[in-house]
Length: 335
Figure 1: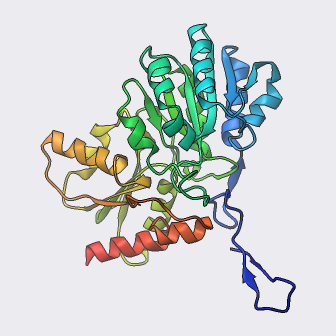
Figure 2: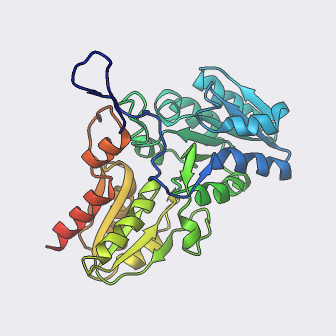
Figure 3: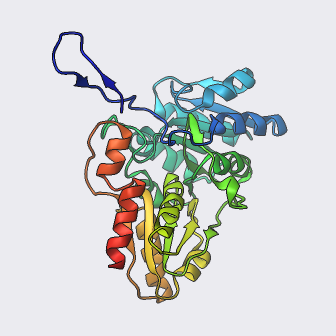
């Protein structure tokens, strides 16, 4: 958070940092606009790919695609229903649309159009939602804390919650090749590069064990996989051995991999950049119940409430998504 003094001779007034900001740590390796570059590259190999946005090209990294393929880019204005209706029509005509807006506008404002125009006919339309979960400080109007809960009940829709630039770059061509509709929780701007150090490859519909551990297993998705890995490294200092399982595809969910890791008596924790209602935690819990397993799982995620506005570091700490809060929670559970 930056501090700015007001030129009145009064006590300096605190001013929060930019509300739409990178969640990367200082000095962390990042990649610029990985979604935009991956989509532009995929379009070089597949002439069917087109890009659309609802007046948010710059803020969903779709501008990179627009610059590379201006004849295949469509600016639909601030009309999300029109955005997805047009994308459905393009898919019916044999194109492969990627349509970007903020997650709140896709999930809340255009749900019926996505459901009946795209999901019901099972069209290859790729919905790209910016600012998922708590990746902006602008408050409830822009914080899509419940987007996965809204979309999980929609038949035919694949949901992807990527961790970093590696996930995004590898996911885009697989989403284009997927027959039905997809929803990508977009990480934009300067996105951390994390998974390149873990011999990792994104596979649509698959979870991956990034590291083993005998004491605790962290099951995570999205940017919380980065935090899970950081927390695991910190917990080593406390002689706690932590496994991390990354689940980038929320639906369809890789129950086999996750349930295999949850067998046994290790402390099990889910981590998600989403409300604990209807997201990863409840996906894992329902898989356990249906499989006949009985065990406790501790959720780390956003509370079932409308969140405050403010600077991201402050909000992530307040709502339990920061590394130090994760470490404290795990240590408290271990007693």
